[in-house]
Image (cartoon, rainbow, N blue to C red; front, side, top):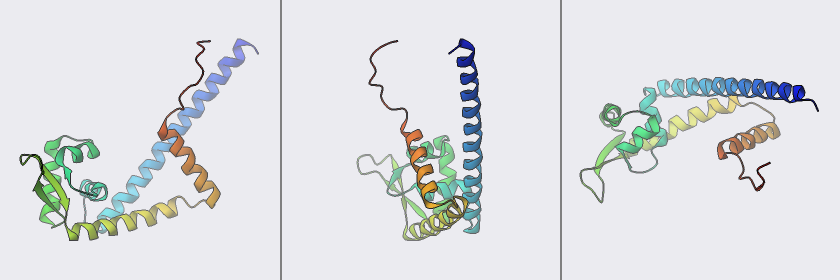
Length: 157
């Protein structure tokens, strides 16, 4: 094989990676839009909806900031809004009373179930593929998220 053929293969691989990246961004954008629409139907701003869907147990405000990729000071306003709606409460952390944990109320649990159900229904129609294709896509995405397999090749070439 000529060195030129390797260069063509690299260019083709780069083009495929660029296309994959674009497609994944488009898919996530559409899923986000569907999630935001489901949240709006329930009268929730997107950030409050994200907190509800990710909150499965008491969580410190810092963890919520990590989920939302924002500063902890921004989380205060989001949690204030959820608290005004009666969907969460703040409770002192068991080991450190200075740390506040956000906890879903019964109404919050109910709203979270509604939100997840609506978002899942929209996602189901979005991924309307034959079962084997849907499973294959799931498996491929799981492999991508898991990262490259550990190399067992100890030779440096």
